[in-house]
Image 1: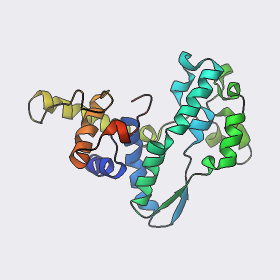
Image 2: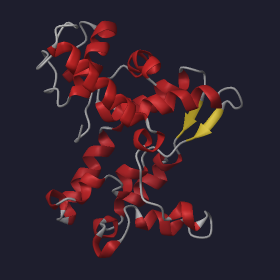
Image 3: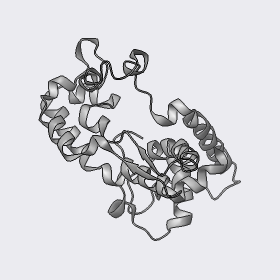
Image 4: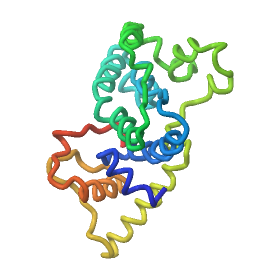
Length: 220
């Protein structure tokens, strides 16, 4: 994973930690899939349509209207976050990714559902309404397992966090160019990981203005 990090940041053209963590296994998977097929289906959009992210179920979004507004906001950001990652990692190997959840009719239906249906009240799992729609289509153990982000489930997050910690330690010891605290025209770097990824990103995209061209997730 460490050997792929520079390549991943260059390919996805981004340094958001959540994006990089999921892009590492995404790139490795795309490489293997491209050896067998030309087109794959992906799940991009489902979390944004049905409230799949854990932060969406915090007190900040307890009001259904606030939750709906956040779903709209996250959906509008897809083009330079998850869709950018998905497009870059797959097309790097000539693999076409199709996103059925982002079909116009699916988006329209999902966004007209009452936001209350997308909340995790009463012990419901996230995206419960979507899971229920696939009853008898998928095995129960898959249908009702808890969400785990790609980077976490693949083990990439743990490895990358260790690399970032090592990078910070070397910077403090004077063995690297030092940590960047606030680069110009960027959101404030929020973690050791983001500092590491930004340093790599800057080597490939020096002169690009992040705030004008990139988005960032609500949580690092």
